[in-house]
Length: 418
Ligand SMILES: Cc1cc2nc3c(=O)[nH]c(=O)nc-3n(C[C@H](O)[C@H](O)[C@H](O)COP(=O)(O)OP(=O)(O)OC[C@H]3O[C@@H](n4cnc5c(N)ncnc54)[C@H](O)[C@@H]3O)c2cc1C
Image (cartoon, rainbow, N blue to C red):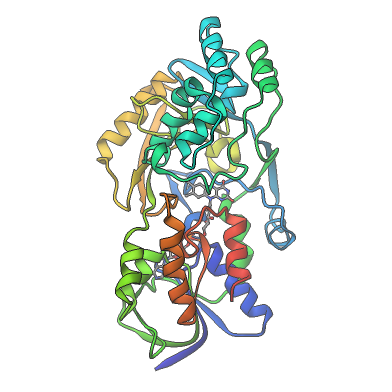
């Protein structure tokens, strides 16, 4: 039987990071990727000459190890200028600091509610939101958005993932944004980088080129005792060190003789899956990089524009958008037809495009999007990770660490963990 020194399961950025570290250590590493090419979530696809990433993807990496790789590719720098759509209005991001377009009586109500916000923060996300923004802002914007984006009520989520992702509310900022639309950008990163050519995947092309990658190799069984992995083509290969970026619940499913308490813990780990509805337009209709959608009559919670990211993503004179619809669990809660119908409805409602502007719509489902931070999730996750660590299997990346990691963090998760 063939034997490999470092066997890496998954050719996303985490697996590619692990392979780079192995090369630097002078070890021989092979990545085994289930898909027909590497890239994972950072991969892209083409429809009728339009290129789409797998969801929004812009880079704000600051770590020198990551910049050393990403900066090999020419990139554009975009201001992190996001928008919000609710009812019939567009508000800059974050909403609480940009209430200017609302009616005067609405502003008064929202600000009064902010001033009367609950003092105690609580340990669930809904209480955190009410404490930060007051009941009315919380209920009108982030609590509704949470149900769409996390496919989970805010009260069921913990607060451990928030970090700098949510702008804390300050009275001065809120008041300023009610009097003027000229508000400063307070997004947690000022600039977003994106390759001039080749989609987000171009940032990791140097890693893909330098790595030894076997594509169409899906791991279907792991025997930790004999250090053997079986692939879907029937091949069995032995390893000295095993590194896995496969989602933890899947890893447990294919590993033989996992203790029942670890199986139970893995069974409680839930992530969202994402339906991507990509749209090509026959003219240049889109100016915004990305925006959030609060209305429940639109299924998508967010959309971004590949053509604003780079004109290289579309044929000349055209533009594009991709909408993200989230479901709880690996399967979609929606039929393809209703997703597409909802996007066409959204385009009209948001006054972006009419049916005659649309060249095509395209649907793709991603089984793993964001891990869901249910209360106590970390305890179950650590039980699973500790088991594999004790057995000498390193679990890396967004779904191997089972954490809210950006691409730079997923890279470092692989790079620093073999
Ligand atoms: C909606 C969304 C938006 C995002 N936006 C940004 C952003 O703007 N900026 C940013 O920096 N990050 C962003 N991220 C995060 C970024 O996508 C991830 O951190 C990163 O791509 C994860 O890389 P990974 O290698 O850990 O996982 P993945 O990319 O999922 O790679 C895992 C690989 O394992 C393979 N695999 C699975 N099962 C098997 C098997 N049995 N055998 C072999 N191979 C297998 C998969 O095919 C896949 O290629 C976003 C993520 C999402 C979901």
